[in-house]
Length: 494
Image (tube, rainbow, N blue to C red):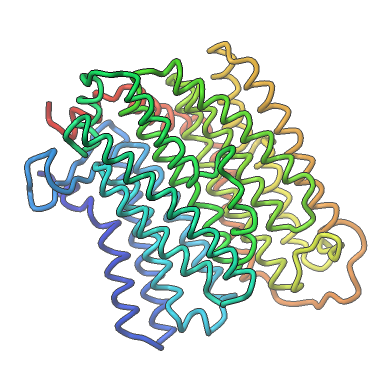
C-alpha cells in the first residue's frame, strides 16, 4: 500500500480532529478561527496533491484496519473525487474567510466553526467513500451539522426552515436506508465496486430498475431536482450569509456527485429507462428553477432558485450518458460550485453593508461599492455562460455533447434557460447596482468582505482561459466514469 493510499483518510480525519479541538477549547474564538483555517488549508493542500497524483490514472484505495475488500470501510479516489475535494476546499476556505469578517460572536461561541468542519468532514467522506452504507453515514453527518448551522441564531424563520429542512431530509434518509436494504438483499454486499459487479450479474433487471429509481428520489431530494426541490429556496435564504454561501456552493452538489457515481457505476443495467428519466428530470429542473428565479425580488432567494436551475444542467450531462457529456457535466459542476459560492458571498456582502437583500430597496450600489458590483457582474455573466468565463465553456461542452448524441430537445431547453439566466442576473444588477445610490447608504470599508468572492471569480476566469487544460482533466474524469471497470479493478484488484 502506497503512502497516498494511507493518506486518503486525511480529508475525513482532519476536520474531525479540528472540530474536537474546538469543542475542547470552548470560548476561545480566536483559537477556533485559527484551527478552522489551518484545517481547511491543509485539506486544500492535500486535495491538490491528490489531484496531481490521480490525474495520470491512478486510483488510490484505503481499507481501514487492512480488512480484505469488499469487507470493512473503504475509501477510493479517482479524478472526479479529487476534483470535487479540491473545489470544495477552495469554496470552504473562501466562506471561512468571509465568516471571520461577518459572523457574530454568539454563533462563534456556540460552535459555528466546529460544525463547519464537521459539515466538511461529511462532504469529504461522501466524495471518498467506497461503501454505500458509509455514504449514508457521511451524508447524515453533513446533514445533521447543516441543521445546526441553519438554526444558529434562533430566528423565527430560521427555526421554521431548519425544521422543514430536517423533516424532508430525514424522510429522504429513511428511503436511503430502505434502498440500501434492498440492494443488500439482492447482492449481499455494500461495497460500491462489488455492487457494480453483482448488480450486473443479478437476476431480475426490473427490480434493479425500481431500486435505481428509489435512489434517484433519495439523492434527487438532496440535490433538489424536480419535483423534489421545494424545500431549498427558503432554507438557503434564512441563515447567516456565510452559511448560505457554504450551502449554495456545496451541499446540493454532493447529491449530484452521488448521482453521477451510482448511475455510472451501479445502475447501468437499463440506461434506456433510467438515463432517459434523468434527461426528463433535468429539463424540468432547469425550466422550473429559472421560472422561480425570474419572479423573485429577494437576492438570496433568487440565487437559491438558480441553484435548482443549474442542477438541471448537471443532470443533463449524466442523462445523455456519453464520455463527452459526462466530461462536460463534471466541468459544469466544478464551475458552478465556484461561481455560485461567489454569488452568495456577494449577496452576503450586500446584506452586511446595507442590512437588506430586497431588490426593491436597493439601487446604485455600483457608485458606493464599485468592486462589489464588478465582481457580481463577472460572476453573473459566468453563470449565464458568457466567454471567457468557465460557464461559457461548461455550457458549450454540454450543448455540443447533446447535439452529438441527437438530444436536440434538451439542448434547446438549456439554451432557452441560459437566456433567462442572463435576464435574471441583469435584473439583480439593474435593481441593486445600477442607477442612483440610495441616500441612506453608508460608505464602509468593504475590500476585506469582497476578497473571497473575488478569488472565486478569478478562478472562474482562469478556468475559462485555461479551458483546454480543464476540459482535458474533466474528459479524463468522464472517461473513468463511463468505464466502471477502471474503478472496479482499482478497488477489488480484479
